[in-house]
Length: 170
Image (cartoon, rainbow, N blue to C red; front, side, top):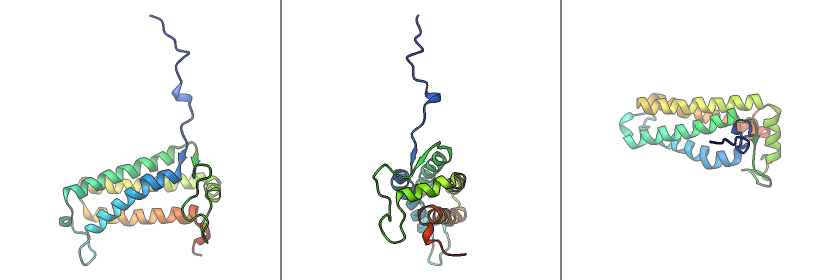
């Protein structure tokens, strides 16, 4: 038996594909976050309080699946060796409107403080974990809290990296 090891690709040393945020956010995170918010909102009664009886087994399954998808994307951002805002020539949401940033500007904001951006992605992962736990436990109070936390995590990141020029003075 002859082994030819020189012809095999060494995957351990290959550079992974960079994370492309525009695609990730548009195609996975935003639609899955919307599912998380929709299910959470469906659980609210007329007084705005979460009520478990308003959710079905399918709702809890959707919540868990969406949380897992958001978590996977957030974890990919955290572990990425390279983050690219968009593919070359691709416009991002709000680019070209007053107060909107270009892809190059957002790339600069992220590159200037990659550690804080990774921390925001970790916060997104934690928020997704909250939904997964809430779904597992069928706990509407935890789900309701996770919904508010997710909104805050998303807003904080967007204001800091996507439209810092729109940030309200403190």
